[in-house]
Image (cartoon, rainbow, N blue to C red):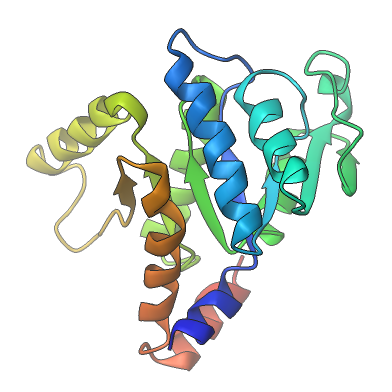
Length: 206
């Protein structure tokens, strides 16, 4: 089973800030995650910039000998200082194409700390999952408890019955970077026991 799980997680999309944040722990976490992905033989798919946590995680993967796919819209190529050292760099015409390609190229999603863009991309993947459009694992990298307010908001939404009991919001939460790859692989392994026709339908509807 572990081999099947690892085969499923070939590329991970990492959403994160184009700034470093105020706590050095965020950049340290991004660097550690990059090394973990590369050491596990997992490629990185990310937003293509060289600034902030985006640049840190990408350079860390590269430094550890891993593969990086950067996907960036043309209008952000200068603002976010497109990182040209990656093995594959895709410049899209707009944000919609960027997000679509990031989804298609990835087997799982990790949210490091970030701003509105990071939140929007992560919640979009959660929404698609909730609606049954994919079964790819989604993980909040809860560095220094960064994502606790979002988790509490989800709980509030459910308590107020805006998230209905029959609609699951499926996500993982990792407080430590070392736990991220094993948790993603474990989530992928659980899919092996699901109805393959159900998975194929979900994954092909995206």
